[in-house]
Length: 554
Image (cartoon, rainbow, N blue to C red; front, side, top):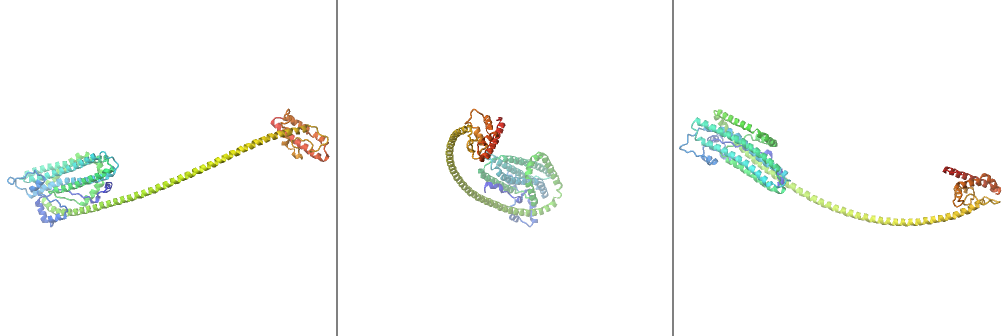
């Protein structure tokens, strides 16, 4: 299974269960319960896969040596009288009532911590994937050391409980009088108090170790290349924890399992699992109240012992009820074992399904990566094609630009050539104009000479020299511009200004002169002469008005 998928696989909460070990009863009571119950030991063993630990015979020396090799063997010649069954039952009942809750709490908390540590480490793997690998080996050794210390502490605590059982066995040969029984009870009270204090100290140590583990887990940095080795180590640690748990169950041959209502414990475990993160935040606060809790636990243990003394009278009646309870517990153990096997089977199926789902997801991811690669190749081909088209388009545009520039260059050359030709034509035209003006000036001078000459005796409209350069055909040719150009030309009368020229024109073309001219004209042309004089008079007045507007007057 890939390490990157480990954090996705966790134990379902519905399959969580806990074994609660307690002290076993003497063999005499076991014999009585076996005779009162139709179930046999062979039947019990067949209904419990793996075998339920048998009851410890407190008077058996081999069992005492199995738990403590240094336990002294009482000599048969010096051993006192054997205590009665009622006294043994009373002592065992006191021990069960005093140590049973502590053992149950320790076992439950141990199982809970084991499951929580494994699940929490699996959840943290994904967070730790992007971290560096500089201190991984050191931090992992620290984590394993803390877990090993916690397990060793639990083992030591269980060894203390075994020593307590051996102490009970040793004290069986020493109870000869009621005074000695009370002294032994006081000693047991002290042992129970010490065990309670050690259990509470162990719980506080476990909480502190858990805080240290969490603090270290937050700072662990690892790389993806080393997650597989981490997964292997965690699996090995988990198997080690399971083997140690099995060893703990086999070591408690003298302790009889007491199981409370499994469904209630299952519900409590679910609630505790949901509240585990909240409890972790409250551990620091709870550690401050450890002293008060220890004192309270001590008082409770004392009250339990006092209550045990007050209940000695009713132990006989309780024996019969315990027989029925034992039978019920055997049935419950068989049912719990069956449920555990069923849960393990379903967990294995669930894990296999998760692995198949992960494998399917990995195959799907590979197909998606292949499709993405093909899409990327197609995209690259499309981009290359677009680049080629863009290059061709750019080359084509460059060719078009070159063609346009060549055409524009030809057009500019043609325009330059046309411009030069036009300039040449303009220069020729200006030369012709200058030549024409030179010719015109000559014509004007000739015309002006005729204009200044005296009038002939016989005149017609065509022989009269009118104040225009070109001889008019009729009065309509006597325009304002023609009169102005002729009178104000610089080709003649250089010593006279325009004002003097206009004044001379007024005198010459006055209406009084018209009669003198008409006297020399044939009668048929006299109306033309009158009209011509009238038009010239109008134009001269307009010229005079223009000169007044310019600031000069004739």
